[in-house]
Image (tube, rainbow, N blue to C red):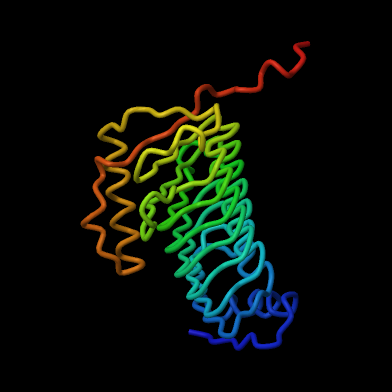
Length: 245
């Protein structure tokens, strides 16, 4: 395993060092990360990146199969247009995580910001996942076209909502699982509550087990039957605004 001290190293130089190092050692630990951008972008399969600190915007952008584990918080744009791989964040996450995400999984131990999962999509076996232990801000799953978002709501105060306003706005694919029913005024008009079936329950159990393993959490109090599933009202909610030739 290769260890890199990133203290005082600018983001461009740091990413060049990572690019060179993965040809020698695919298991890399980065120490003293303080906001450097684009860390782990376009990383290929078989690479494991451990980050101690707070990576800056667009960590793991366009990543294609690597695994990144962050011991700290992460800033905006985590997994931007990510193709595959796994991101595990032992902390909170900023806005737009999973923007246009096309595959792989992001596990966030704590809370997440605004517009999480915006423009997520899926294709055949590529079905991305974002799992959040705490709560998420406004516009969760905005314009979502595929994949899944799971929101656990752990540690919330009594009466506190799991998600902000406009959840599922413009949604035309994929699914959002909330550990409790969202208030109607928080939902976008394109998202509708649908019945939880056996496949959904198996899917939730699998990822609850993963979350518990990664973050060493006891989730015995989290009941799968209490989850509420939201899906798109239709697959083309804005067809009326386009001109037909």
